[in-house]
Image (cartoon, rainbow, N blue to C red; front, side):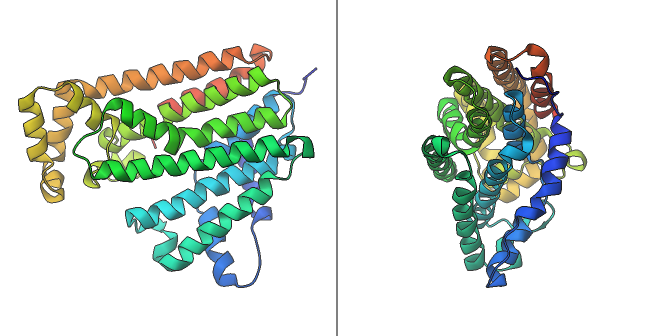
Length: 328
């Protein structure tokens, strides 16, 4: 019988943040380990480890028991950001120099590789009976994230992608790690097979809603609230839901106007407001908000399926609402 109360997402984030420094690697050469420490301590929402800890706690596992795996998912996420920044030629990450900009590109590649290796060591710190299942699932997750990243880069070279193709990509690049985090917490806590799968689907739907909200904020968010330059994805020719949806349903004249406004980066910077108005007049901003609602609701439906007292699920429900309504 599970009788201890659930912590809030913010309480678990604070506990995770406070313990993170204890897991930082020290070693020789420091030229390898310092960039790792720099990357890990750059801050962030810590959404993935918090989700893992919350799902574990839902089924009776104390946060301390799941800390190695929580650190692993955060480090894996950080590793992907370090390598993403290299691929995107991004000089900044969370308002400070990215790892490759501060140290060097070869060092950033190697630091990322070392972080990934470290993740497997942390994942394996679980009861031996769970090791095969946990490591196998983590490998599968990591490969899907790589697939998603490659598709995201492939899409930059294409004039258009379908909504179906776009959703397939973000299910891998963004949602898969959230799905694994939720599943991992349930598995470590000894939840049954059906609960593990419902936890996985909860995380997957949550992850898609999370990325779709990013799409919305990238185009329509206020920079003073989001801390990001509006239209950043559009400037890099990254495909988003808005881009895919307008091409699926707008008339030829609208698409010609869109192509003219987005013909190159300079014209796009000048015409960003016009592009946003085009999205609005085509109604794709509202369709995107509807999609976010649908995926968030699908996540909440999976939460209801978990065989735990409904009162214990309130904090995960709040997390779902918070991620859906976040400003940055």
